[in-house]
Structure formats: structure tokens, C-alpha cells
Length: 456
Length: 182
Image 1 (cartoon, each protein chain N blue to C red):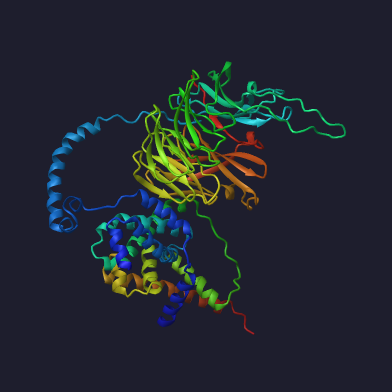
Image 2: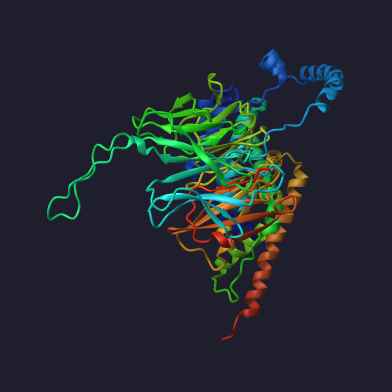
């Protein structure tokens, strides 16, 4: 029996072993190696390879260092104990929180108006109430990219600058249903409209209009508010293919070009503010950099590109995704932990406002990692929503954390229809997860959604 | 040639390490897959092992022991991957339904029982079996690769093989009971 079992086990293992690893495993490992230093004995660095590797030399140095450390510890301990906790804002980008500390309950999103055929901005509350914030039945103007300032006082959105468009009357030749294609409509420019919101989240007065920076006919990304709600970061992709430009615009209309370089084609979430508002992390095609907001030169964080970046609200970590890889690094570029990410699909990575968790999608499932990487959570959202098996075309995207870090908003798509669902977090760790469709929002096509907070 | 690559990588030559890693990645992946029984976890473990290997190479004293040293790094990375997943899996583990009446040839049945028995073993026990039976290391080298005494390695090996034998015997008893006489 022994011999038979040995043979059986050997045969089974050999036939079960895969012949080749995915080439991406080596590529990802080497990308990480490119940023990783080698661990060496301190003595090896000081005294060279042969002497520095000797055990007695290392011991002697360790003893000396221990004595110095002991003396310094007493002095340093006092200083560290008095160091204040980071007091950065609890939210970043589009997520806002109530000044009274409660979670925001409303969402805003663009919805295609059936009468005018354009997208207008609506505010939805989870109980079912809706209210149009921007646009009307006949304006033929698309309003997109709603972004609420972290203090809840402003809503910025994007619209086409119609003053730059010269409409042409195209005569219809006799016998043909349509005329020639419109020509010479002039260069297209976008404008960011910023409206003030009252304490209930309703717009007040006229919108501030800030022309989008960069050349005409550029592709303009959604605005990212600075944590102090005074500026917006805007990524502009000029039509000449010279690469993405990172601009910062203030509410008085002033704009400043901070950085330029090859952008990630078609990517979203390529920029995020540091919670202190002094710099931004920017993902480009072949690198990730930290760019100071005052115009000083950028500092490279990693020498390979990424699809999305997110700075944790407490400022201590930066999450970076590229195909098949989620890296979490410190602001000085030191790798803290790494996870496999999605092969394709949504590269979004989002920190919870309390910086405890970071979420990303891997192989069609929602992954939740605590900031200390002590464990990994994975939720098969589609399996929970469709116990009998999800439709073939079902997928989901990560939209936003609620301000209290207790709910995560997802858009589940089947064909052309989106359904908004929230993943609830119960307890101190998300050991038990409830997926509940948000009934009031069923059937809404959710392109860009943010939580709207109400300030006092 | 390979020792030369290890030596150059140890001194910080990334290109040499790239060549070395390219030559090792398939073997590491196979071992990780066998030990972890999960392709995603295995790929994570291999990636992590290669990065740790690069970081810790300057501390490798004897270049000739590179293989065993690398196995140890891989098994530690695999253990870390399992540890990270374990807490969550307890909370949402789904129940797989097995068919009520299995229709399998004896070979297939044996393999399924081996798979089932193997999955119940800890990573430490699986690693001993894989290094011995798949990689072909004698038990003292298995012990050296895992950084444990030879006696411990032998004890883990016997425990693991006993568990596999029990799984196979249980399957044989079940088959005998369900066989319909002609």
C-alpha cells in the first residue's frame, strides 16, 4: 500500500501541476523589483561584503546601536506621544460628509432626459425623492461629471461652452431625407459650472463658470476637488496627442498648469489630492508621480504606469492599480503591500473615508483590504445579487464610499441598464456583508454618481 | 551559468535577477499551485516570493543553496497568502453541493479523494509532500528547505500520507457498499 500510495501521489501531483505560469506574474514581479531595494546587513554596507557579513562584526555594531537607541528612545518617546493625530478631511474627491458628522444620504447623477435628449443633473435621496439640479427640458445641453466639494457647499459639473459653437444651417438637397454633415461648427470648449448648495443640498443663485483649461477640442476629465474645497484638479487630454495636462483651477477662475506627460488612454481616476492639499498623485502611462500643487517639480513614485490612484484620507498610504496589480505604498514610495487586481475591467481603487479599508475589483469580485493588510476580504457581489446565476453580461463598478465608511455604492450593469446597490459594512470589520439593492434608484443609468452631503 | 546569475543578482544586478526569475517562475508556480490548490493565490505567492527573493538575496550566504532557500521563501509566501484569506473565508465560505451518486472510474475517484484529503491538510503538511514527491527532494533537503528539523519534516510527511491513505480507504469502503451485485 505504501509503494502504491507513493506512486499515486507522485503521479497525481505531476499531472496536476501547471506547465507554465502566466507571463504577467513575472512581469508584475519584475515591475515591483524595479522599485524594491535589497536588504543588506548594515555592516555589509559600512564595511564591505567580506567583513560586513561576519557575525561578530554585526553583533558588535548591533550592541553599539542598541545603546545609542536606548538613550534616544526616552527623548523621542515624549515627542512622539505629543505628536498630534492627522486632522485631514474625512473625505476626498466627490465624497462629502455632513458638518454635523452624520452621513450624507443623497446622491447626484446625470440622467438622460427623454424630452430634450441630453443629460441633466438630478439629486436623488435614498427614500425616493428626486430633484433636478441642472438643465431643463429644452436646453439641449449635456451636463456631466457632478463633483461635490468636500465641505458640501459647491457642486461642480461639466457642460459644453455653447458660446464657442457656431451652428450652421445645412440645406437638405431635394429628394434626400438628411442634409450634408454639419461642418465648421468651430472648436469645442468645455466649461465647469460651479453652483452653491444650500444646507439641504439645493442650488442657490447663478453658477460660477470656469472655462476648462487647455486647447480647444481637448478631452476633459471630471474635476477633483481639493480637500479644502477651494480648488479643482482637472486633467486635460489635448487633441494633438502631446499627452495629458494636469491643471488646477481656483473658484475665481485662475488656472495653473502643473504637469504634462503621456496619460493613460481612456483611464479615469488618474489623479488624487493629498489630504493636506499640498500635492497630488498622478498616474501616467509609464510612471506615477507626486506633483506639488504650487508648481514645483514632480517627484517619481514608481517608474511604471498605473490606471488609477487613490491617496488615503489620513495621508499615510497611496493605492495604485495597474492591470493585475494593486500596490499600496507610503507617500515616499515604500511598498507596504501588494495584491493581484483585475485582469481587465474597472481599475478603480477607493479608500474608505476613515482610511481603514481600500476596495478594488479582482476577477469580478469586490476585494476589501484593511489598511494594515492583515487579511483579505472578497465579496462575490453578482453571486449575492443573483443566487440563481448572474446574466452573462452582468458586471459591476465601484462608485463611492458613503461619508461614514459604512456603505459602499456600486453600479451593477446588465446590458444597458444600471442598478445601484450598496454594500453595507456591519461590525468593526466587514465580516458580515449585506448587499441590498437601492429600490428607489432601480433602472437609473449611473455614469458618475457622488454622495451629496448636507452642511449646516 | 546559473550560479553566476545568482551571484550577480546577489550583488544587485537586476538584469541577472530577471533572467534568474524567468528560469524559476514556472517551477515556483507549479509548486505554489500544488500547495495552495488555488491559481490566484498561487500567482500572488509566486510574485511575492520573487520580490522577497530579490530583497533578501544579499543575505544568502551560500549560493549553492539557492534552490532550497528559494523554496523556503515560496512556502512562507504561500503561508502568508493563506493566513490573509483565512479570516474572510470563514465568514462567506459557500457550500459546494456534491452529486448524490458519483459516477466515476476508480482512477478518477482516487484522484478526487487525494484532492479532498490533500485540501484538508495544512500548508506546512502539503509543502512537505510536494517538495518530496513533486520536486523529488530527499527528506533532509526538504527539512533544510523549510527550515525545520529533519525529524519534524518526517513526522509531517507521515501524518500527511496517513491522511491521504485514510481518504483513499474511505473511498474504497464507500465504493464497495454502493456496488450493485450482478
